[in-house]
Image (cartoon, rainbow over all chains, first blue to last red):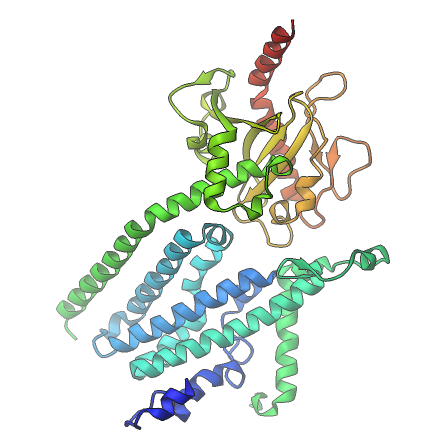
Length: 222
Length: 243
């Protein structure tokens, strides 16, 4: 993608200029919605017992976040500010329903497995937060990128937590057992605590700790 | 901004949103319906999973539908074990049946024939920890020994209650268990708390999911009992046939 961006003649706002790239990379680490802004924790606790649902959830959130940002940004100058929040909710709810319908049509078993969680994307604070903080004040393309970036930042943590919890809690990744039976015969136990929501909080807490000790600038000194 | 603008904006926005969703709903409805049909038929076939010509997970949707069409005979029953003619068994929605008074319920019953063997599959639906759970249990032609089982749920906790579906071990343990004790009294397979004692008519429970396990046990007890009148009829029919 970088090739095509450099090949096209430079216009006023490049498609993938430095600022645009930053919109995607920033939420992955420096401004991660989960570990730095501590948003979207609720769903991060709920779906991360297994890797597979987490991946589907991440894809769904990237989609909803990107397109709700785009849509809001397109109509941002026409939204009456008295009903700003309601308009955003309608946009998010519409997109979430689209995800649900598409999933139902193309992958019914996944829809069955995730239907509760997909509906809960509507209440994901990250999405509403990005609409309020970014899309209402920025142009469509940048808002779109910001949405993708934040969705990916959320998804990265989600999948990381899910990998840790599935390995420790169920001895598997994506449903495939990774410890041979001899481990269990020798007295190894899957830690059942790790499949409970409370342990997700623990894992996220430890991730935040690790991240802040690696990047001291993230530490809140106030 | 004037009230008029706000109202107009809201109306237009609602209209667009409703239009998109309604359109998409109708466009995807046939596919969703087929997906659901395949999903349900897979669940029924899963109860006899060990006896299918190919493993269920390797079969395409079309293969599932044709296998179901070819090898399964559907019977709809009322609570007295009488056959109903006005509804096919796959159309019976147990979620709806559970809301009816017990005497008015309709029961789906499936007879699977393949490789010279016959199995009878019974469906059930009950309550887990958070929401509904359901399943299918297949018995061998003695109408007593369980040949296989499959379970599913609406919203049990992943990794805990959801293991009734996700862990192959849970349903595998049902195989060989019975509906009646050695004296012929109704005493169907139970779900133990923790590991089941050897040589008892119970299966291992899931640690951390006692309530879901109890739900499965209760559901099995209640629903297999519903089928008893018809099972007795089948039994007397085979006895007559033998004479």
